[in-house]
Image (tube, rainbow, N blue to C red; front, side, top):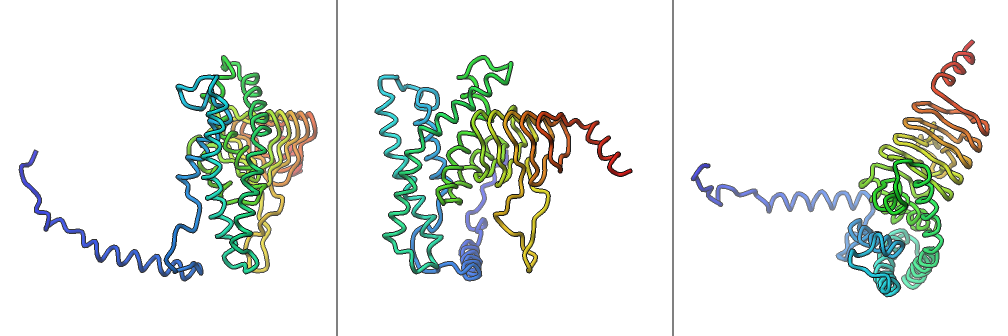
Length: 314
């Protein structure tokens, strides 16, 4: 190694200039976005805070599996109560931030109204937790029964990325329905980063949903999925096209993703696009590209799909 010592004066990074230039860029951005330039605290929810909140909610939902490693059954209720008290107060602050941000140009939304609305949202989420736990139990059971490699429901809960994604989705979907879409999206993106499974919090997913392997699965905002549906890795339930307004901007909120009925299986690499209907009990084979309705009980394979398209071209 070299014995040369770098003179600190020679290693100057001209930070005063860099900091000044960064401040100028931030100022231009805030002015362009009509953001407040008044001194104050954070305007938007924190991804890091949401990560801690979701970790606490996971533990409260499954205390003996996803809670502290030294937790004993006789202390479960105390742990759940203590954890929920902490994380729900933390969530209340994050909800306030989103609502305040959304209401900053609405004179009718007083601080008292924002506070009352935030409290209502968090209370509703808290009351929904038992139902969310029941839905997640059905997802765990579906994974255990649908995967011959699974040795126990505990293995499924602890190890399967599809279950991790669904824990986040069940929470995110409830937040989305309660009117805090930014928080919902943050919760969904935490799972996306961890598992490679991208489920928009607006997607409606019935009980007993099983994502096998999971990596690369994409489910769009307006997708509707029934009960006991199974999908494999790299499946996309996406939009075929985006209607635009007079200025050429995409029209948001319109139903544009598939409606998948009960007991459907969609195998690896399949792509289903548009507001198509996949009938009850249908099976979509691997690597198939579907842009039309599929009848109940039908089996769509790559070879059959190509043959049908060839016939349609005659």
